Amino acid sequence: AVTDEDVAKVQEEARALVRAQALARSRTLSLSARSVSDLFRVNRVEGLAIGTGLTRRLGSGFSVTGRARYGIDDREFKGLSEIGFRRASGAGASVSGYRDYRDASDEMETSLVKNSIAAQEFGSDYTDPFGVRGFSLQAQTGVISGWNLIVRGVVERTAALSVHAKPASGRYEPTIPAWDLRERVIGAVAERPTWLAPGGIEAQLRAQVDAIGFRAADSADYRNMLRLSARANFERPFGTARLVAHSVIAAAFGDDSIPVQHRVFLGGPTTGPGYEFHQFVGRSGASQRVELRFPAPFPSFKLGRYGRTPASMTLAPFLSTVWINNRSSLRGVSFFPPVPVGSSGPPPVFYPSLPSGWFPSVGLGGLVLFDVLRFDVARGLRDGRWTFSVDAGREFWGIL
Image 1 (tube, rainbow, N blue to C red):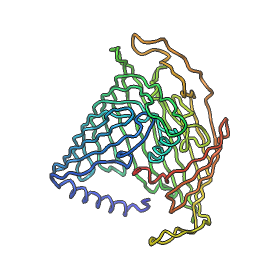
Image 2: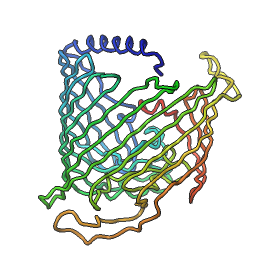
Image 3: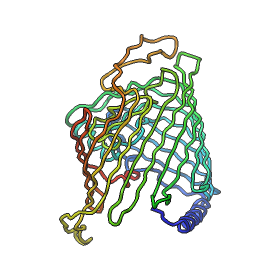
Image 4: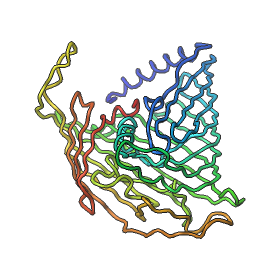
């Protein structure tokens, strides 16, 4: 984490110089993959999906990117084509066309590599995908007073997906009943990388706002809604211990007909340990997790010529709570909007409105092997259960 403003300025200047040299190169071709899971992944819709991507740098900051992925079980190609421009400061713009599957989650519950293994072997897929295809125009600023700002305009179509794959054991849950819609979106994202806040707190923030106009395929009338979401991470060292807090909040504002894919989805190892995956679905919700990490004795063993593992591990007892407004479980429930969008279609089917409120839990985490591997056990205190999870440390999810 960056804990000195002068060091942060030097680092940003160094990044700008490196970007300037990289962007000045012309006619270079390189692989384009955001993570390991862009190459291989498993989920209940695609089964095993294999993909890759290429980026062609044209010089003067311009580039062309293409990515493609094919699902073995759904027998569908997904992909993206993008033309972009990037300055050494980090500012730039891009225009893209895409067809893909998007996760309705407000926060990833597991790393995608762990999710692929669990989905393949045990039928445990902790994603809720729905189909999207469309065009996007995006512009971003460089770092301004420590913040990055992204503005985008999107025209796309969304649709529900079906389960096509079969796991080695167990069975998959059904996909969410996403609405088939035409959408126009204007959105903005503000990000603040890790910085030293007052009180010695290392903070990281991300906030997003989307103004969405949507209509059914057989209707010409658009309805409007606003969706807000934010994520924050706060850490404060206390000697060899560290207090870590992770917050997620999201809300959808509109009439009674909020599309399923734009509702708030919470519950699972990250946002609701001790509860089922996406057990909480509503118009607004929040998740708060606070844990204290401190070293504890642990057996050390050899890693061959690379030495030995540390003779300690990191223990992380934690408290977590979920707040949800209009909690409803979608698992196994097929329904249409309470007020149908469009002029035709089947009559609405109402699903039960379950209690809203707070759902706390307690748990204990353990990080081993240089904090690369994490074990968690948790218990939901309100209609919850015991849960156990194993995953890579969250710091590694971006490359997995």
